[in-house]
Image 1 (cartoon, rainbow, N blue to C red):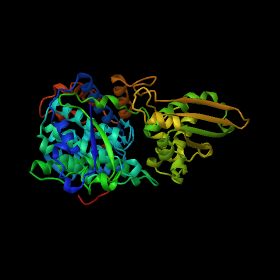
Image 2 (cartoon, one colour):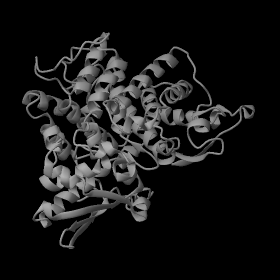
Image 3 (tube, rainbow, N blue to C red):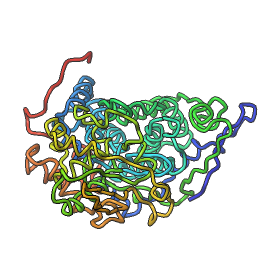
Image 4 (spheres, rainbow, N blue to C red):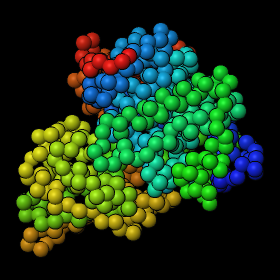
Length: 499
């Protein structure tokens, strides 16, 4: 990996494109370096993971709306839509929209956390949609996805968006465009323009994850995917982009991030260096914000030491800056303590999540968020006894660059009414690569089977799992096999719109 200095330049400096971050990103995308075997296998795992959560969410309102919008844009040679028969094809940017929403809805696919946050599995829907439309083969798709993961994760390692209240799709959209560029074998100068266009149109604020969190939390990455497909389409036709998009004096860095005095060091693979960033990411066993994964596992472990939940006086969660201020009491969001809050808000409330996990000893992507479950009086009482506190050591470990130091957990103090305490801590979730039970191929398959149980036929399940595990051998025009279809008549139709 090579570190690239990124800072703001005045227009009169006339910064050469070879010195611009977007050009260097495009160079990584255009590099035809082979994808290593373990990376290709992990890409298959993440395609399975995405399909798991997409089918489980297929009839939720936001997913239904997104799918209906997509179906309003049919294209005979286009891309497939989760839940529909593979013969039902739509324009790729709309497939990216529909499938990206389905993948993101349950907040249960993969994650990477560093200077900023990301769900790099969001790269897969738009890259796959274009691959299906352009009749690419399995190896092409693997190369495109490897690039998408690499670029997003490298940006997340080095450029913080959230401290400026910018949503993380600003790193996602250029990564998706770069991945599509790799997939299509585009030249560096074309990918360069696509990356800049994608970045320019994808800067949005984090209000989507604050206060009354709505379905836009699921739509945002899908919207980025749609924008990325459209950006690549435009630049293939010869159109350009604002430049230099990162370093210009009126650029995103100058006005929306660290400002004119900004300085970042962005790591990118050197020419001929394999793209391995996906191996640093991790998926979710539980349907909730990633910082809650270890705390759910910790709640399961601690509950056996609590004989009567009503005897709990207070629970203090000592954790990182991010967990405290984004999903903890440090956010100062009253909605995070409201039993009538939306599912999207509840999965960003560690107080709610820890209370339910402690009481139930299990976590379910539907049942744990049901209004009846959230409104249970004993749960509300326990929930409101929980507070979070930032701990410098957990913040340090959250931001660590050493994979063995990196941690997303907490130390929990459960204080009982008699003054006694139950204390325990966990650094990473069980499913994390450094956890007690790291996820491997059988775990991804098991997750798929659990999440799709009762929703698809055994035959369809077996067909998909066989096809995806043979991804590298899928010939051109056969990537529709990566779609998962529901039985006829089981896919819901939502309210009418315009399309």
